[in-house]
Length: 349
Figure (tube, rainbow, N blue to C red):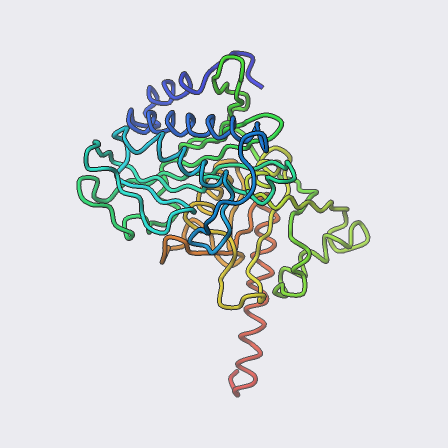
């Protein structure tokens, strides 16, 4: 942990001097930190201020909590009139949110999940916010859905805030991953972890085991090998974790290592996965890769996927590079076996 008291603002100035970000991007990051600080205050008060469900559902067909709506509003209020954005997209909004015509526009697009893991609110488990920033293809024109459909490799910034025993903002600008802890006494985010790296050795995996009957064979194989422990092919014991909050899962892996799986399964065969590509999978993948890990669908790198919709869902596997590579290899072996069986059944060689 750094011994100085470098604030987020000071850190961004350092990054500007090293030409890792523009003045406009630095200002946008500060606005996002303000939104996260506001949400942290609301989360900390819990049922004293906001609880229960709103009288609405989001585009995903999910019942919105009151805090989902408040968090979404916090991001909009903190950014839409500041002159840094051409438009934004959120899990809670069906279509892109344009910048008011009375406000200046900027060169960036914002994509965010305002309150990840909101189903955990009622039981006081950590929740978070996730955001991604892209260049706007046409910053002077009206924003359109296609503007946001960029692969994750084009992100210029990604981050998340986790609202737990402490509020921590994790950020990448494409030159490492850094964490800032909110000092409530002075109201500043303080740099507490610089250049974070995921431990290479993994002793934990996170997966929703209740879906086991729907898993594809490569996932079942991987989990069974972990569960076999020292007596199995991996030759060591693994612990299982599952929080049902993507931010909390990502933060644990970033701090302690391991692998997270929310794979494609046959529970709903028409869906390629459960998590949203643009404002969940892509920003988490950017952070994980910058910390030395990997993020994949099981079949390809997450950040290479070309989006086909604002709220597209996808499988997400991330964490220690060796573990993700192993899972990808099992998927590749399964595909090869399936192709071989198909060739045999049709008379091929």
